[in-house]
Image (cartoon, rainbow, N blue to C red):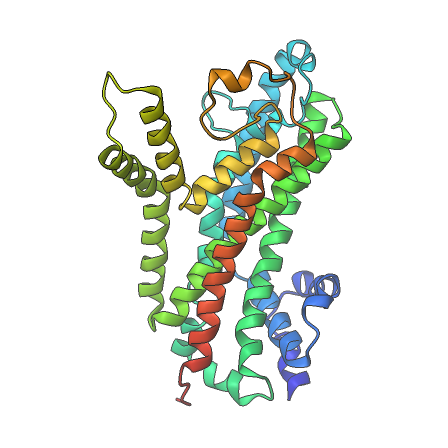
Length: 346
């Protein structure tokens, strides 16, 4: 029965389904068990043939490529001035064209929507359609169901982000005519990997809502409400709490201002969006040497120049650890709740 379940459905498009074995081979170390491989293969087929995913991926790709084109045109106009400071290729991802924000802003804003769209109906959608009991009836462990769904969605996210990043890099190379250096390549790859982790957090969160709520509409609304709260209100609440705990006036001293800024920054970093934005800034702007408030005494003897790639990684290591930890916590909660849920045949 496992073999019958693992084969793609007859309605899958042949042009898309032929890539599923290749993708499965790439990620084969993650799907070693037969039951896990069957669920993984089924979810890949569903995602590749999902209109919802294709629409979201198209929106992200079109907006990102438009931002890259505008930024590349502006960079090409002032390439002599930019070349003196180095890291021209990285500016493709951070420079804005005036009418459009940079590529990183689009990724930070639209990336979570992709993660939410892939996971908000992963479990309750199967329950509503009456197929969850059929999955459990197969000779497949229950944990293989949620593990396969999560791993397949992460693979889809990784393929989309890295493919888009390589397309952007190729288009930028074509437009500005300046190849990236080795360090720029490492920074771009690290940025794409960070983006995968960031979107995976929203995938794990939407998967948690899919397990908690039985209706897909409820889980979708809860996921979108959480996304809006994190993106818009966490920063505002951090400022309000910092003003209430450490009020500063026009005659405030340096110590009070420093305490206020540190508290504001610490509260703001409870948001994964702020963690991602700060880590992206450090990776794609090597001249950024710190993320906290800087005193004049600290920069008096500082050596000017960009940070090496290794030092930038050390600077954002707490941010990456926080994003990975938040993702694992959300998925662990989903896993425990799903394993304890009673599944009755309809």
